[in-house]
Length: 110
Image 1 (cartoon, rainbow, N blue to C red):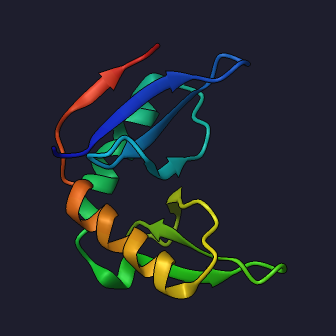
Image 2 (cartoon, rainbow, N blue to C red):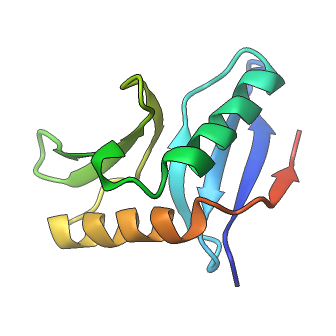
């Protein structure tokens, strides 16, 4: 099964999206957006940028967990991953975003 996006409201009325893999695991989480249109533009940016390896900023947290940010051409963060125990797991997460990020399925949970 292919992945999909879920668009939802936060508790303060802002919007966010997550990208889910085919197994329903969240693989990318957006920032909060003030408008629905901005969140939808964020989804379009993931769809556009997810295939380019240079758009992934591979990071390590202070507690030695690996994670990544997906950035747009203007270097702004579009979405962030969960924390992974190893760099290899993080890299599999990046591959999952590449495989699922072009999905056009958006589930509206607002």
